[in-house]
Structures are given as C-alpha cells and as structure tokens.
Image 1 (cartoon, rainbow, N blue to C red):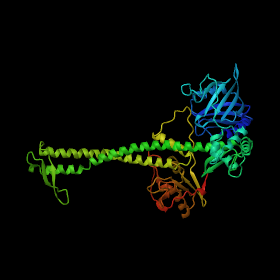
Image 2 (cartoon, rainbow, N blue to C red):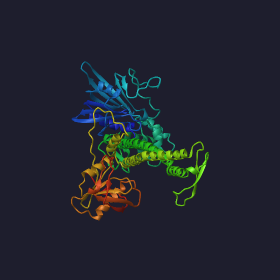
Image 3 (tube, rainbow, N blue to C red):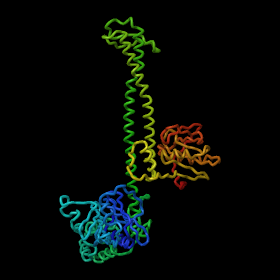
Image 4 (cartoon, helix red, strand yellow):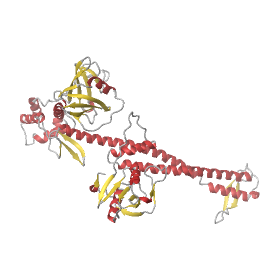
Length: 562
C-alpha cells in the first residue's frame, strides 16, 4: 500500500511518540532520493528514513542498513548544517494530506531557530523541503518559476503546500454523505479513489469490503459516510503485511492478516525493505550479468576472428603439396604455362590435379610461391593456437561467472562474485575512502544421516571449499556442466550410497543442468582434486572418479545454517 494520508496519519502519531524530544545525531543521504536521520530519543537510537522515490516514497522508522557515499550531496550538507544536534519537537500530519511536518528546535553557538522539514509523500511528486519562518532554506528537488509556474520550490521563496485536489475531504461527513448520494453503482472502491482525497486504492478496497455500499449491507449515505469517517480517523490499528510466495505485496495499518506487526511503522518497514531488497537484487544481478555478457560478446567476437583465420589456413596442406608437385615436375612445365596437370602421389587414389600457375613466374618461383603460402599459414596456425585455447578458457570462465550470478538467491550471494569481477577487470573498483572489510559468506550447508554437506555459492567459495576440505572428504561436480562444488565431510566415516545420492542431487540442482531429468555427477576423494597453478577461480582437474546419474533436487528441508 502506498503511504496515503490514512496510513500517514498513523505513522505520524507513531513517529511523534517515538521521536519527540530526540536529538539529531547524524544525517546521511544513501541515495539521491533518500535522507536518513539518526535520532536519539527516549533512551534509544532510531533511524528515520525519508524517501522520495516514486515507487518507494515513505517516512518511517527503519532497521534496514544502507551504505552512504563518501561525499555527501548538497542537500545532505544543508541538512547537516541546519539540523545536526537539533531537537525534534514534533511530527505532525498537515491536515489530511500526504505531508508530514518535522519541527526542530535548532540551537547554535550564537543563534536559535525553529525549522520545519516537510516530507511530501506524493509518489513521483514526493519531496523534502526545509523551511525557516515559512521561507524555504532548501529542497531535495528544486523547481524554479520557469519549470513550474504554479509552485516554486527554491531557497528564499515562501513555502506553499501543494495545490489541493478537487476531491471530498473525508473529515467532512456531510460532504462525504452528499458524495455517496451521487453513487450510481459500479466499482465502489474506484468511486472512492477518484472522489475522496488522501486514500490509496487498497484503502478504498478495504472500505468497499467494510460497507458493501449500495449492495445490501449499507444503503444509507449518511450512515455509510459516518462509518468511512470512523474507520479513517479511528486510532485502532492491526498492522500486517500480505505476501504471495514470500514476496510482500501489500501492507495495511488496519487489517487482519497472517503476518502481523506491532506498529504501522514496523509493517511499512518490512514491506519496503522487502521491495527495495528485491529491487537492489534485480539491479545488482543485471549489472553483474551485463558486465559478464559484454565481455563474453567481446571474447566470442575474438573467437570468431580466430576461427576465420583458421578457415583461411585450411588450404595449408594443399599449398605444400602443390609446391612439392611443381618441384617434382619442374622440367615438364613449358614456359608461360598457366596450369600444371600432375599426378598427386600424396593421395591414396593418385588422381590427377590441376595446379594454377603464374605465367609471369618461372616454375621454381611458382613452387616458392606455394611454399611461402604454406609457411605463412603454418606460422599463423602456430600463433593462433594458444590464442584460441586462451579464448576458449576465458569463455568457459565467463560461463562459470554467469552461472554464479544466475544462481544467486540474495544480495549477499553477489558480494564475492562482485569482488571476483573486479579482480578480473570486468568492474571498476569503487573509489571509497574506507575499504570495506571483506565479508566471508557461509557455504550452503545441509545435514543428512549424520553427515554435513556443503555447496559453494560461487567460484571464490568453490576454491575455499576445496582448501578447507580434508583429503578423504568426498568432492562432487557435474560432468560437462558448470555447477557448484559440493563436499561431503567424512570425518573418518564411510559414506553410504544414500548420502552420496543426496549430495549428487544437490550438486545437480545447483548446476546448468538443473531442469534435466538425469544429470551425470562425478565424485572422488578430495585428494584427487587439484587446482593448477595460476588457474582462475573455480577451475580444477580431478582423477580417480566415479559417476552417478541423478535427478536434481534442492533438499531445502535439509538445509542448515553453516
């Protein structure tokens, strides 16, 4: 549910209760659309998130961690200058609008001022505006008279709230009753959404279900208007988040749902955290995938050029034979001849071949011409052979990177792969003043019949899994497919066939052959798996292996925290 005026009413009350009297300790701007304030109030530290993104506009308390840039943007610096150390006096909703007013008492070394930060939560028109004595000090999104003649948001201009919509205010029961009297049937939720101010469509759906106006449950406009008013302005809440297949679809301030929360803020935070995490996951996946695909395209083009050069050298042996035949028949060639017909004694059938000659050259020079072509093609093949081998290895490695990216299940899964791409030169190193300490991510871990089984999430983890394994641990990998490296910790015990089958099914699931019915999975003791010197992450060679044919299975019920 968007933060409509109905929801913001409850959020404003909760924010006022939690933050009033608090001190502003820190202000950061993690993205161009968001300002985060760290507020110490009532003996606790809170993070106030003010987001103006068109899809995620909100003003809530949040526990989600965000990384701030090293250099603060201009509006963030402005807020730090005027609000750092200030006392947050109150949080109030302006009328029944989607605007919250954060009032601050700002005490400086030589001055004291009352300032108000307006958070306008209005979809694509959302904004943050700082004012002092009604005059705009600064805004996150500035608009001049040339851009918007109706409403100017520029420092030094008097703050004017957005122009009111031509809709009925639900606080006015008589106007609401009059509106309902004009209802002539149809989608009642849509009717409320288009004619009553401050309500999002999900809220209108709730009111429609509550009243069933005009359909038998409630026919009196006055009574219906009073019920709508009482629902909207009641302090009663039952916050919840509705999910579909684990994904948050809506959050509500007052509705019976499966996933309940103690406050509207908590429900909103869970909803938006889920939404933003999924968006960040998609964006990160697209970014990493695009970098790898661009490099793959470059390598495929390179391979195409190598293949073309190989095709150009397909006549190498023919040129050598032609040179040999001309030399063998040199005294039988007439001066100025353009063709030599000779028996090809290099062929099993000893057929006659026609060899083109350059009449301006002597027979010996014609032979040398074919020898030169042969030697040039031979040198070319010798030169491009290692290039082809290197390019094919590069393409195989890029496929393994794509596999890791496409198999990622959350943002953490990308962290090591992103570092790998930076080391490989596919991504630029971020120019940050402080380098983050690399987080060591756990393997996927499973428990089955008393054995612990681990699966790498990416190439880096696959290498680490190999390093940490004991010589008699069982290592598994799909045959001729990219897959996670899987390891069975034997701890000196004999591994039964059922455990081998279980681990092989996991290995097949985390592979390129996931959708296949039967997948060959090789397994051997760790002692027979070697990583060649200077080889890329995830690359190994192995011997003394056996093969199982299995059906891929996730075995999520057996997964544990490693």
